[in-house]
Figure 1 (cartoon, rainbow, N blue to C red):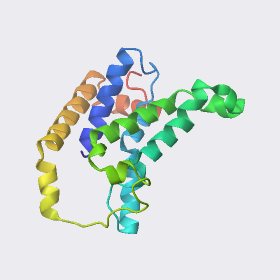
Figure 2 (figure 1 turned 180 degrees about the vertical axis):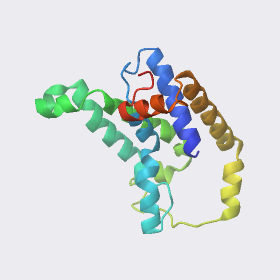
Figure 3 (figure 1 turned 30 degrees about the vertical axis):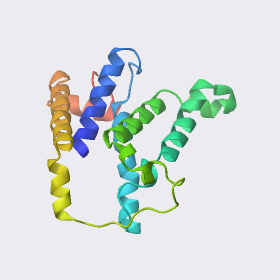
Length: 181
């Protein structure tokens, strides 16, 4: 999946979870968006620098579980962290992990066991190969194309619902992370 699919579907899920009371009403959409793209933000530059496949360390369960543990554990068991750290580690951090796990699910990461189970199946990643025909095939895959179209639709509906086409509303949402403000 690409940018529109990851961001649109994740924000749509965030809206749904917020309505059901699973996500905080004051959810920061900027943090959710960051989480929705975090594996690619980390892995794509790493892949470019090292000449390896674009899904690597941040697409692994080790990364996801580690990040989730450090971001959510203080909320569940605040006594294990000093109070000044636990205070800072409140509201937005679980939202980041929701974005991260949504990204991994949308990437269907279980289809790449060598990545999702890294480093347990071997310490390295496949060398990168660029195949323009394969990229076109990937883009035209009904799952990917459908995800991009639905993601764009969700982003468009939310922009209309919250009137983000108005400059002041868009700037306020970008500054605060809140779409309703």
